[in-house]
Image 1 (cartoon, rainbow over the protein chains, first blue to last red):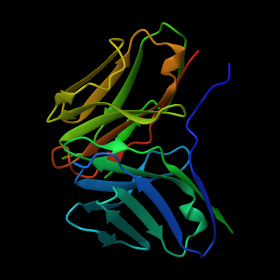
Image 2 (image 1 turned 45 degrees about the vertical axis):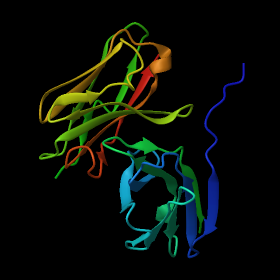
Image 3 (image 1 turned 180 degrees about the vertical axis):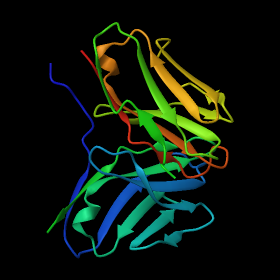
Length: 110
Length: 114
C-alpha cells in the first residue's frame, strides 16, 4: 500500500529577500514558544524564543511575532541567505514539556 | 562546551536485537529529553528527566522501550527487542533550568532495524 507521511509546507525565497514562516499552535495554555532550525543530518538548533507576555522579539536577522488571540506564531528572517535553508520548527510549552510542529522547509535560491 | 553528545551516530541492527543509545547532556543542565523523529510522525517526545528522575514517559511507545539516567552526565535509551518500525533518528536534548529552559539537541542517532 501507499505510505503516508508528513507533507512539510515548503517555502522558497530568493537570496536577499525576507522570509516569513508561520506556525499555528493548539494549546491556549502555552506560555512559552521556541523556533528551531534543523539542517539536514543535524539536530534542531535553537533560534529564538518568546514568552506569552510579549508579542514581538527580535534577534540577529530574526524576529518572532506572537498573536495569542489566534494562536499564531511567525518567524521572520531578514535578508535570507543560502545557509538559512533548513526545516524550521515551532515548539509550544504549556508547562514543563514542549510540543513541536511538523516544520516548514525553507529553500533559499541563490 | 562540546554540546550534547550522542552515540552511536548510526546503528544498523536486525529485528529482535537489543539496541542501546547513549547520551551525555551539557554539563550543568538538569533536564534531559529523548525524542524520536520520523517522516511519518515528525518529532515526538519519548521521555524526559529532571535531576535524573523520569518525570513523564507517556511518549514511550511500548514496553520494549526503556530509559535510564543513572547520573547527571549520562542517559541511555534501550529498545529490546527492536522492530523495523523503530527505525528513526533518536535525539537527546538537555536544558536548564528544570524543564523550561531552551533545549539543546544532540546530533542524533540514526537507527535502522532490518
